[in-house]
Length: 401
Ligand SMILES: Cc1cc2nc3c(=O)[nH]c(=O)nc-3n(C[C@H](O)[C@H](O)[C@H](O)COP(=O)(O)OP(=O)(O)OC[C@H]3O[C@@H](n4cnc5c(N)ncnc54)[C@H](O)[C@@H]3O)c2cc1C
Image 1: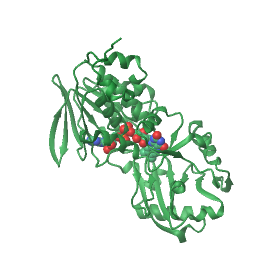
Image 2: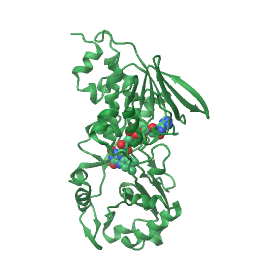
Image 3: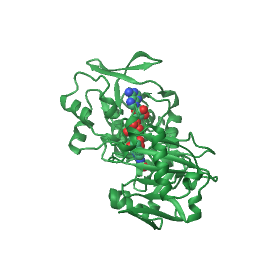
Image 4: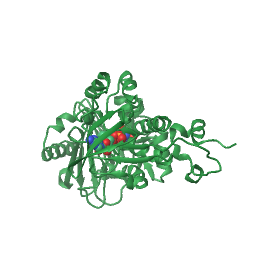
């Protein structure tokens, strides 16, 4: 029996978890699709995972999509560092781990044929530092330490954790490739307004202001950045106070490139967990070549200390610390870099701390302005959260009259 597209989506698991499951030729098949509401002109603010998935799915549904992005690249907090490393080596500044229960993230990985590989090595020992003692442990000792310190969600069998082979940025790039002429880079939003005629957004284009009018706006800008943008006067006090007060986590990462992976000769795989709850990763364990990268991953409490330092001091301090863990590092060290997410102009933090009551208030659309982003999901601090919230907004926008 012929059904219209909205009914199809309603009755399909794809309604929220990805309308793109529909094949375009099926979607466009006049024999099975009868009617649908007129396409809407949708302006999406931000080309991170939330904005990209929303743009992609709204496009599949026939809407007219434009994404404005402040940076010169897609992905936002998904950012693979390829510079200043040699030999094509790379390391993640943001998202890296994908657990096997993140069905939505894995769905898009599969849809776009993005290759996966294990997150953790199964060979060699890891290091653990507890109350001043240095212990070697089998590889699974790393996720065991994460589970003990950050909760069971982070631990478990190492085999349940995956990463994207070639860098996590391959996933946002896959979305962006399919949206390419819909994304406007280097176009920061400076003002959002709305009145009876609808929403209007002012962006800077080549440094000059330009106002874009749309039927619906989807704002995925992190609240840590949004609070410094001029917002509509009709936003409720409650919403404004949530936007202003949202807390974001400080995270720092420091990367050291070495001439070779000398730790393997000592039976170590380059992963360690310190008594200050700093993770040490060796992201290059699955990458070709003799060179390696050791990196630190510090969370609130420790990250701010690193953030206060200049880049050169971050590298020299980390070199001294890691040389104690992996003696011989200093002689093999070639160069380094760092990332402190509080300093990132377009993120101002790594991820939000969500309060469920606030989450419900902040998620609701204000007039014709909708919201999405990891900060508005129950999976905050994960790509899965950004994707879930993006699909929720797609449904809201598609169903709005
Ligand atoms: C250190 C770190 C580690 C992480 N680890 C993991 C992990 O292992 N696994 C995992 O799944 N997730 C991880 N995450 C979380 C994951 O990266 C995020 O949840 C997700 O990428 C957020 O997507 P988003 O679209 O909500 O926000 P963003 O990625 O921040 O996207 C928002 C976009 O808006 C743009 N923007 C900001 N201001 C403006 C403006 N004024 N005008 C126009 N555009 C603007 C930004 O440039 C950005 O592109 C990690 C994040 C960090 C920082």
